[in-house]
Length: 537
Image (cartoon, helix red, strand yellow):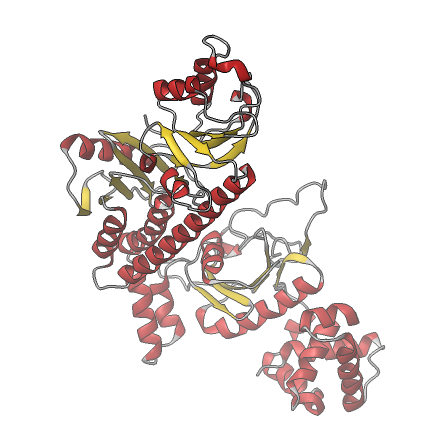
């Protein structure tokens, strides 16, 4: 029967009863039951109840001193050993450990007969060995098995990653996976056909069942399914939503970490098949080569995909993002890019930068019109809602990158490729403001104003002349810009620039002295803000 299963982490491996019996310090002896090498234990539990069924989860070594068994149990019919053992087996108990002394000098013969009848391993615990010592030994063996399994998974992950970097990545990953699982690994295409395979060829029944399981995951919400056919463990993993590629695995046995290993292979194959299917990997590589050889940004932008592709100038957003906790890694950065709809991600230091294709221009029907004719970006400075508050209104489709859970975002205005450097600076300033104001997302404002009435060349010349006294110290200009944008808040400016508030005070005082300006005067602040906005380089 097909089952869906996506465990978040490999479970703790069980231990063999033989490994426990091999401990000389315990002195355990098996009296009856299947060979110890065939018995696995998931834990140890002590109970003196005459019916331990309600207290067992399954897989335990049940330890008892027989306190519930009358001393006269040697007489026929004095105690229902058969019923007692039957209840342990029904609860899924893996084995029974009986402690001799102080209640019983030997293991009751009726208990031995009942365990032999039901196939339950019976172990004698000598007087010198405490039940807590047996339980501790079980947990120690399980911890060692867990560590060994984690090492095995790590080695498999490294091997699969190395295989994915080979010239023939898909066959290499399948070969490595099949070798690790000692079985068969198959890649199915969107039509259900076998594209590539590696490992031992299974029988016809298993091969048909694996293909059927692959079709099952493509037609259901679950991305993973398992089955068992003819003693062979089957598993299928959908490689990305809606793409139709499936990884099928058939193995004669299944260790606790096999699902994790197969999941790593599925992620790698998902990336490889995604690149193969869309061709974007080759296009991005071509764009990189052309940039390195001197091509202009606007010439290579169409190769990156997205935006308006039918002859129009493609526009892009630059997004700067920082995680709310910890530092970004390659996996979380890639996940953020996928959520924003772009594979163009750069994770450097504490900031992740993403280049996102912009929606159609407002004059083409996109965006939200203001009464003054400008386009208002949605979500500008939207503060995270408090618990229990109503959720903020979702931005309309096509309004640009949206806030992402667990991230703080700064978004530039949509620009042509030639303006990417300016947009990068816009996104950096927007992120600084978002962090200072504890907002989930801040967009760089894009609307006409009085500053647009001054020709850009004259505005920049005025800005350079006005700010010349601090032009040689970039930290002063940047601090003044942040301080003005945050309405003179010392604390928020310190947060935005990642410096101490006293440093902000000293820099602003230095700016006021060098500029010979009264920064408490709103007219002075307005003129300086105008100049900072038009200062380039």
